[in-house]
Image (cartoon, rainbow, N blue to C red):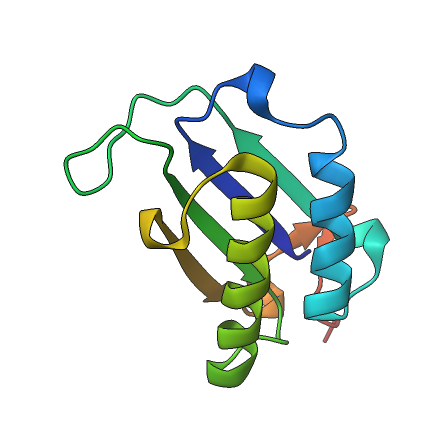
Amino acid sequence: MPSFTLYTNVSRDKIPDDFLTTTTKLMVEMIGKPEKYMVVHVIPDQVMSFGGSTEPCGNAFVMSIGKLGLQENKKITKAFMEHVKETLGIEPTRMYITFNDEEKMNVGYDMNTFAPDQ
């Protein structure tokens, strides 16, 4: 159920082959949910700018059921921005991360939701 989605103007050929697996491992470490539920989605080659410049930039979204909050989001932001800078060359000042702590009833999976049946 946790997901990390990154829209970026970095071209597909500049995204390392192991970016999905290393980002998944980072999500497991940061959010503490099982790897089998992690989704990492990268949308490269976007026509986008940040601050009027088309230098490498990104817009990321993190969703989880729980495990998010002020202190957690600060740690996740630092870790993901370091990871994205190191692997994709996007400076932390050229990217936003939006967090969504979703309710169990709003996340569908395996023909149901994560909310317990009543």
